[in-house]
Image (cartoon, rainbow, N blue to C red; front, side, top):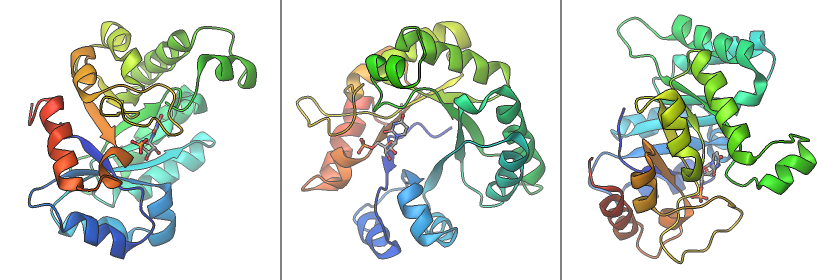
Length: 236
Ligand SMILES: O=c1ccn([C@@H]2O[C@H](COP(=O)(O)O)[C@@H](O)[C@H]2O)c(=O)[nH]1
């Protein structure tokens, strides 16, 4: 899979997206999340693909297996590169998601990679223990979800950089560790709790990094992207 930094397009309209992407003179790997997809629908995927960019469609499905399977069948037809579910939906749901993707991917088109969100990077250990009533360390919970996702046949997980190394030990280097919560040194964390720099992500074995506000809210997004890309290691 593309190893360019994934730019989170947390924007709310097609016009904003087109304006943003027109600043760049190279093919990018971008993430379309709930904010954009719920405003613009599948049309936004078509627009971004026509501009030549790879897409992570970050809708984090979490429902009963039958519903997730049917939804994935539909998403498979969009021609995106990467989609996801919440690992908390369980292994039956993750397997159903994969079945839906396999069945829904048109002949001659590559199946989108499927990854599972472990614990959101905005979650702390204390919050997880108190609110989710999970009485282990956050690392153990993330690792548990990663092993579950691996056993269910998924291609990888979303985790923070802080857990990437133990996941690699348990699930292998090829298993995707897609890590949001990326900030340049000294950058504001906003609502993120488990953050790291692109350089640290590289050294810990992240396979992809997701970068939103550090690029989209920068005074010069093209230059911010170039800095992130250089620190992450260019085109790997
Ligand atoms: O655990 C997760 C899962 C997904 N995200 C998404 O990544 C970006 C991060 O944006 P920043 O502006 O760089 O904080 C955002 O779209 C989230 O929905 C995540 O942060 N953590």
